[in-house]
Length: 116
Image (cartoon, rainbow, N blue to C red; front, top):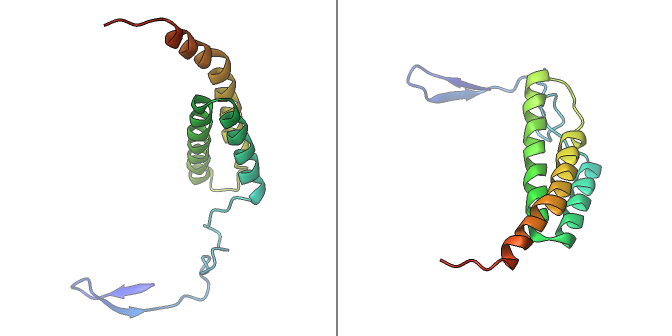
């Protein structure tokens, strides 16, 4: 904790003994993701990348958005939440939509000559 004087300058640094946040991030307010979460994310993104670039980008962005949504829910509920369900559900949903709806539409657009 930093103590400030009237001009806003730091004049003393005080260590608190009962602080929940330690230097190595083991505190109550730290955010942790397990290695398994990243393994599942990477498997989904790599399978999408094997199919097409559009599926890869869709899965990548949706997984990041799902992680952001999980962090928002974490800040609202203030308790431990699993990181996988939102991101994986959205990733699989967008992969299926990209593969069976968007990719055929893109292929049809590329097959049809477009004259300006």
